Image (cartoon, rainbow, N blue to C red; front, top):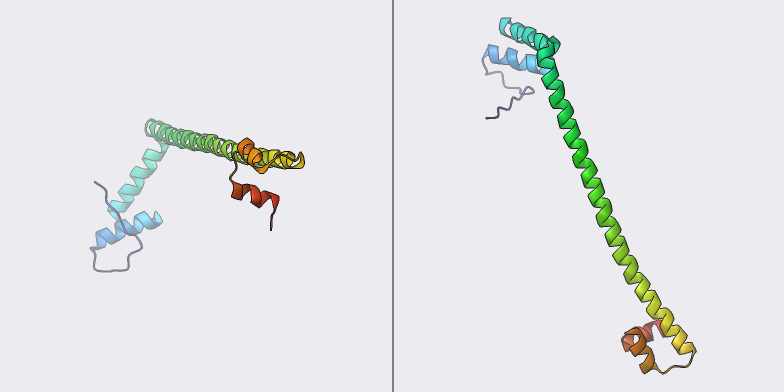
Amino acid sequence: MKVFLNTKGTLDDIPRPLKLFLDYIETGEAGDEYTKELQQAVVEVRTDDKWREPIMTWEMLKNDVAYAARKEGLEKGRVEGRAEGRAEGEIIGASKEKTETAFRMRKAGKPVEDILIATGMTEKELRAIMNPE
């Protein structure tokens, strides 16, 4: 079960003990016997090593898990980014190679049909690189 406390509320129709409790949660200042006892218990827990060690261990574990998750996410992102970059580079490289082959063949006087077969280009693609306008 989770309980949410709104310490910033403005309604004054709540019982005084609850108001003092919410004020204590907000400010840390005790206003009645109950909140003074609560404050004393908090001080005791914070200074008691048998309580403090498990709490610190829990915090360290939580931080370690968060760090590992961030590290794993970054590495996964890098791997995916490298793979995308390689794939894009291969596409660009293949396109550049086709274009260079087409230009070399055209310069050598090869017929358009041979250039289309050698490069795998369509006639429209070949026209676009040979006559850019």
